[in-house]
Length: 177
Ligand code: FES
Image (cartoon, rainbow, N blue to C red; front, side, top):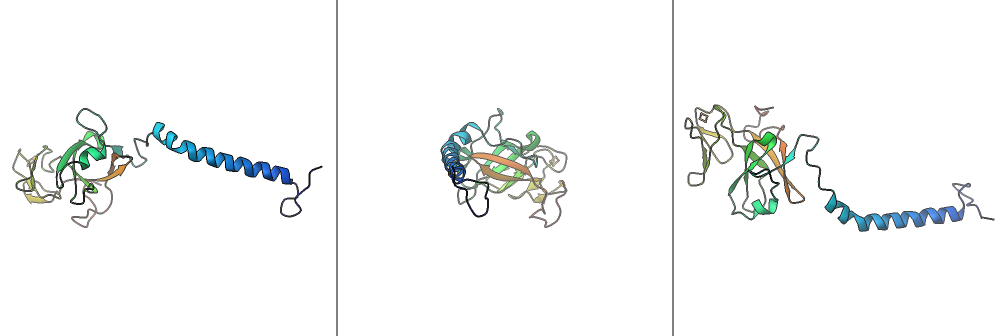
């Protein structure tokens, strides 16, 4: 006959308790062993609840963050961001990605533009607008700073999220929200 535990749960026998504890230890050990494999086979969720996505290249392939980070500091890398919008990423001096992405869409009439590393500006070829390295207007006719996105790294992929917080350049609510 099984001996009952006298205290908190009189209906739980010592054997049942031992079985439960053994099962818990086994389950924990198996979970810990399988976690790396499960993580490998189950990639991070591609579309986040906030509408974020992983950056892709011009051919639609996911871009490893390590590939961008292998570039020189202050290099601008152009990737496909939210809704496929071309978005500039920047490698910082410390070899990490800048937390802002700058959307390659002129706030005048929507042209795309190159980064001029020599003049440290984005320069729109359509009507001559210029923006500094953070996307602030240096010369019009562009009326507004460039749109920002949030950039982070997740399992060596680059997550691009909508920027809905205060614009750190103007200290005001972003014009695109
Ligand atoms: Fe860029 Fe007009 S669209 S300056």
